[in-house]
Image (cartoon, rainbow, N blue to C red; front, top):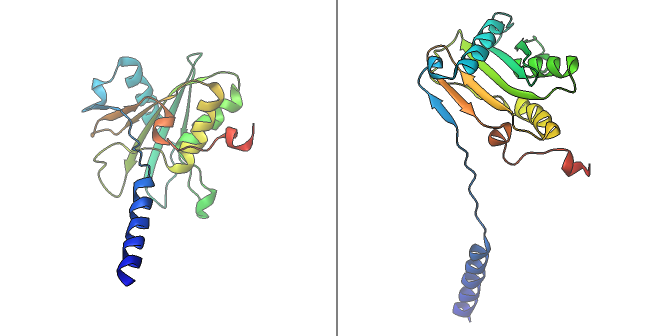
Length: 181
């Protein structure tokens, strides 16, 4: 009797294991050894993001971020991270730049965004991607314009990554479609 019960439990566990459906999420991005290896237009956008970095206010983290948003009409809008002693009150560079761009030109699509980083605490060994809140915020604009927004992530000395779409960084995203819109 005990052997039969053990066999039934084993069969149930096997059936549950065989019902699992596993998927993999992967994306491709371009890696550049140096910012100088980017296309000229991308180099110029990264340069503007580095200029924006000067406006970074990061006395607490000492992690400085600059962003440059290239709009479809050719205008570039820049932003830098702004910290606050009440940490949640600060804002990341990407959102500063994109919110400003869309507030000024709500009907103009975003083509690409360059995001650059520097830290007073440690050398930047590779480019950094946007935080989760920024990914979600940026995705909203990509979904609304129904067109991919390229991201160019860079450091001064550690090269650059080019990501073809914000959706690449947030594959299981939440958007207005889940709200019934």
